[in-house]
Amino acid sequence: MKKINLILLFVSVLFSACNNEPVKINKSEYNEPLIRVNKYLVGKDDEIIKSYAKRHNWNINITGSGLYYEISHVGNGDSAKSGMTVSLKYKLSLINGTVCYDSDSTGLKTFTIGRGEVENGLDMGIQMMRIGDKAKFILPPHLAFGILGDGKKIPARAIIIYNIEIVEKKI
Image (cartoon, rainbow, N blue to C red; front, top):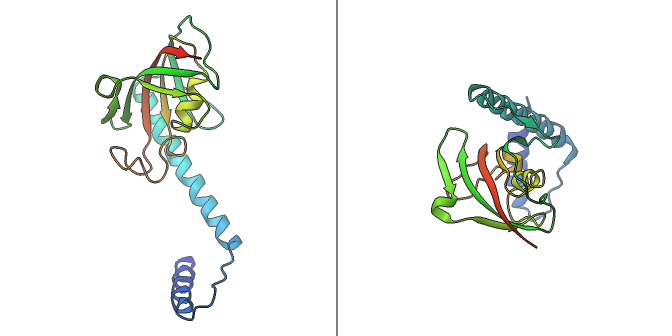
């Protein structure tokens, strides 16, 4: 029934566009289905991530935002905080194991924490670390590259894994 409604909506928009009259769409009638679809997709991503972590024997934690992480080595440097510029050794791969980017081929990843220069999940995860720490992050699509991917090596709605080490900071 909803598919028929959407088709009728599309056809009416198409024909009314020919009249050069503005089309009025009741957005509230589409909010609920979009919210349900989003919750479904987030739930599926969670299942995939938890299954992956279990298969690989990761002692994984999760934040309220949905970032999965494991700090595997604790360094002795300062805590990373917003406004600090850090450099990372890293390997970024898809959950299927395909390596997309790494510091061995592209150099260290350097950015200022809290300025939106990297994926939200990476920015959040770094702020839980200290200089010298090593960690693994699993970023679901909403904390990574979203529904579009990066337009290069990371496809749409990809779950990505970062293996990182903070190697230096600049203030």
